Image 1 (cartoon, rainbow, N blue to C red):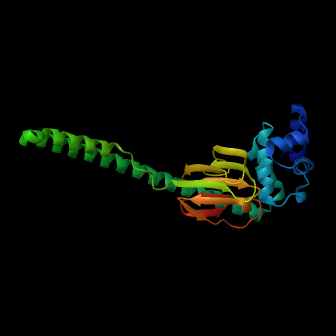
Image 2: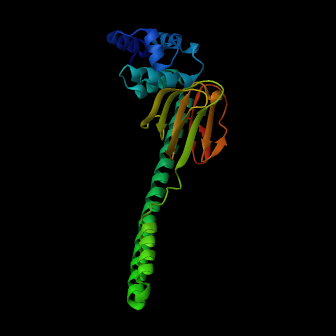
Image 3: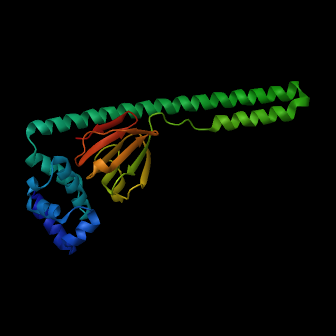
Length: 245
């Protein structure tokens, strides 16, 4: 166990940073950063906001953001809530394994299909040349067309084409990660001006934003609604938008 606030403060002091500079760099208001260092978590809007700010602030200071989120969960989240979070993470991990298994099956099926098409094209081309010499040019063209068709990779049906667009006013994207809150960072501390967009092609996106009411989410060309309008983190898949633990 360690002190969240004092650890953040020591890291900031070591780097010689002040709050105005940090506010510009992290897009988090200085009073919220001060509240994190003083462990006055009641100043912030809610748990989701607190965890997002903790992760962003810690990682900017070169610390392990997930470690600080876990420490916050241990000290300030009730045992029932912790158990619920763990259950959700377990369910998400199982779902991810099922998705990965489905992708593997789809890839193997695609390889088998491509191989079959290549063999059929080659056989058809050879027969055309032997039986109808006068049509050899046409047969060769058809064979090349079939081979070109067979080489095209099948698009993964699980991948969602996601577009994030700012509407009305600026949108603050604290973090966009692949898969989950601990997945690889795709975008961090980014601000979208009205009309500006960001596009992603992923099976699962984890998004944390402080201004969701100004964010339009489009999945496969269709605008989808997300739960609530307060600062929050949520998950986007091909099936829609779901709250994040």
